[in-house]
Length: 96
Figure 1: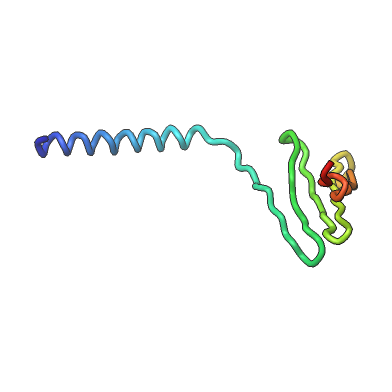
Figure 2: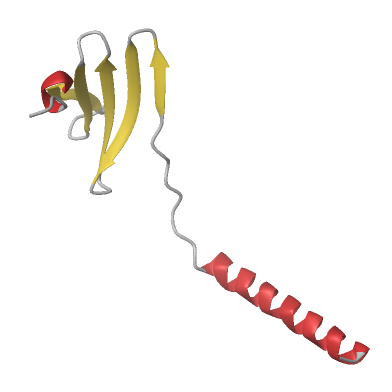
């Protein structure tokens, strides 16, 4: 290849990358918070979501092997947090 051909290829590739970046900046999706968890003592605190509309907080008691799910109740003002399900993890993960 000649030096002119190499320069043209490099410029075309650079232009294609810039066009892709510009198009990508217009086609954005909303930021999503990732699931997080924190362990402190005998408890594990985690976050979860269901169907992109319901956010939840989970608390796992390691010693009791139970998980309690808390869900925000947005009908009141201010928003309250209601206790959802209490799940026996020992029973959920036992072998059958």
